[in-house]
Length: 115
Image (cartoon, rainbow, N blue to C red; front, top):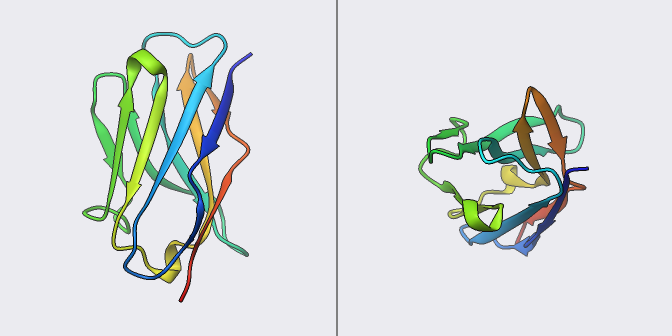
């Protein structure tokens, strides 16, 4: 059974930075896509960024240029470096892993951007 465990969330001031990490375990295949979604209160869950095993990355327009997604394939770990954070980035951030047309989700980590 695939398990995803996130870490790194917290409270940060506007303009600040945070780095999220997510470790995947259990039944991971070599070729997959890992990434991040987020859900703010009262809003639908939305894509933030994903990265394929090959390194090819995809970003939401709202975070492009401020966030960087990366991965360590040897460690089955995906990262999200978030810079120039804005109050509208406040949300629960979920790690995802997609393989064999299935999507697995982590439990989520809260990111709050506030002064």
